[in-house]
Length: 282
Image (cartoon, rainbow, N blue to C red):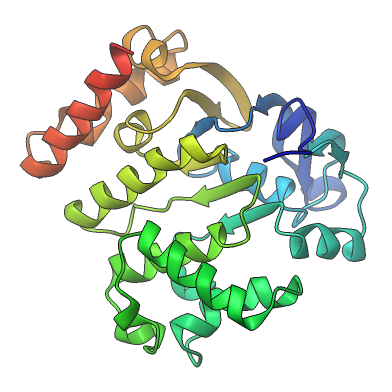
């Protein structure tokens, strides 16, 4: 993509986020710093309450930072107001994929309408929008036969792939995915992970938020570990898996179900192991 600014797509420096007021004030993030380059996938791992979703919400302008800076695509956005955030989102620079795709897909409009809407908002013609919708539907391995259907008529895996296509159709610089595979069965999970892995060649930066280290390890270039609101470890994915430094990270590696559990589905386990072997020997 010509004309793109050099440097990280997302750069977070010394980020603090608090919730509540006065005596009930609680710190959700403390002094978090990380950056993501074009085409890089970074996995954000941690238990519930570790600050993963708060970090995503801060990067999306849904919560305000108490201190620190957030730079997206070369723009300092930490002090942006509602109108500035709306303009940034309408440009399609940053997109978000929910764990539950029904939160982002209008249940009363067709899949084609949902996919075309972000493009029409940008001023793209209906003809070009229709062409791009079909191209990105193909990218996520879905048939054009689904375009006339409503979200409720699709399976969970199909809805999640539509949500990914909707995030990609504006050709964003950064996509944040919040637990994108946790609600899916093993076959759909592997399919989504493979689609995400292929996106790196397009220069899209991905933030993959999850509590499942096994899923993240197969697609992430680097893994960042959050614990009680602090970034306790960040390194190449292979190094985090083979040589975890923090005690909490070591616990995550030992307990990762898709890496170690005998009860994990065999097909998924073998696929994730193959992805992990490729990563470790890259």
